[in-house]
Length: 252
Image 1: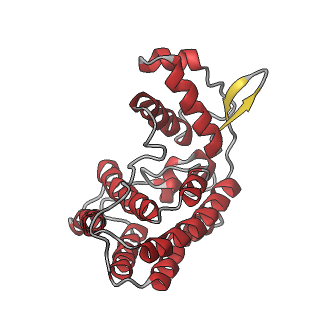
Image 2: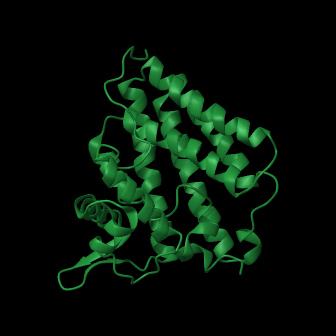
């Protein structure tokens, strides 16, 4: 049976228990790296970032340590922090690892038990995504809204697993955008993707419609307290992203 009261709360951003200033820096710098606006090899000077974002160097150093753990940055004693050169294989491997971790977390969340309030939040994220798709329109802004609901959906499931090791391991796989289509936004992937796959369509793309359907299937499995089905559905769902990227990257 579902639990009546949650003992934890999911985070909208990995590392959300950190100080607000650190989260601000982390979110901004992560986005600049994965979209290529800070190119591979660029130095990540704490002083410069702190000045640009109007914060002290302390939260910047904390954020850079997290980005290094995530695989987006590297640290050298002599050069300091720098942006890693992320390749297509890195992204595909990261998605595969995340699929296994999230699937197990999904199954564990059912074993642990969902509080009614948590299940309500999960249903809200699914319904928000469904409403976006049902409108039949698509743009960069709409895409971003859908991916926010997508992030809420996945983050909550991992949180309810109550497994800190899985949550921390998933952070290590976030080397691609979670706020838009990786095929278009991530330079490590986009360089291999034909131009037609990098255009933003006017209607919801097929992979988004399919992904939304997967979310509804996973929600149903969780609400029905079917741990094995929920775990299997999550594994299949996340691996579809890997398979899609691998397929379009080989059709150049």
